[in-house]
Image 1 (spheres, rainbow, N blue to C red):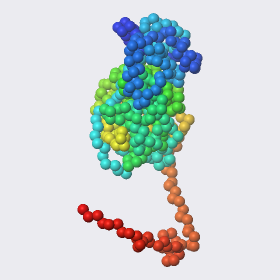
Image 2: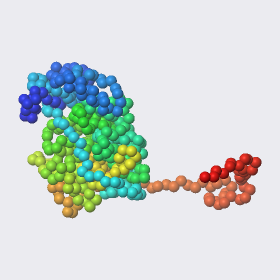
Image 3: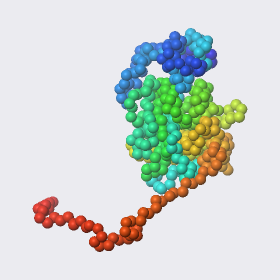
Length: 467
């Protein structure tokens, strides 16, 4: 039994755990699997569970009937992840560890949003894309016809403003997971973040925002599978439910800007499950500066993203840390544009935010462009292409920026074996009008019927109003 789980059981008497199920158990029907495991789990307090249910219902965007009353629900199985979640006492934890249907048992982590460190009004719209899109070399892939069309990107955040003009056409599907972790049926896309405001709306715009008066989206042809999973309530229940839903929709890329401060292995079983399903996890490293990072953004099997500015300098707030492990000891893996990033804010507006949360969706958008170029690419191939394309600018410390900044063209070339070629823009041929008249030439008088000008003769004139 993990020492931190043992300590919680001693201090509290119960603990929330994540269990990895063996393949045969994960393949069972959800209800069957939950019933088989229920005897190992407990409901610590029926009263607390009932109050959580009431609070969650009031906070949800619409009322709904919960699949099972919370005071009766002991365990929840996430079939696409192959994981289960619930509360156990010491006896239950011991029984789970001995159950041959269970692979591992560990404490459930409690994550939090990685909030931006600064915000300011967006500059006036211009013809050029945002500076981050240009810095990664993304327009060269657009010119070659790659905008992310046909690619689904998983986006788990505070929600998304579905009425924003840059996002209306970017949403494939939206799911709201309430404070207890249940999906709210029929929920319309909205953003629950009133502090940033609109953290999820901003990150979504950077991934796949459509061009309006501004060009903000790295993959403006991609579609988002967007889930509201944070903040508040039973966060790990919400995140696991969101991840399982994203996998059920077939998304191959997952962008998340959340984490637990410091290092904990508790989330490792979750990232392992994503990798086992060939999903590419792209996570923010955190905003607490040098010698800090967040889990799971500091794991070896995710792509960890830090933030840099327009001068190719790693932002002071961007996390970085070395670990005692072979091969991939330093995080972040790379840095991307994360300072003064202009993207959407709820209510049809735009705002400039700074944070590793703003850098992460740039890389998720780039991954979408690459996946369109090679739809059969594995998560590892996408990651290798992006990582190998990075260059460390002169003056950027490796200890802060690690491999440096990705290059869209180099990543494309590595993945596909060819350089992107700009698609010629063909203008439609001018059609010769009947009678041989040259385009733009004036018609001869009498060559067409002229409508008489409307006249007011014979109509009563309106009296002019005098003020």
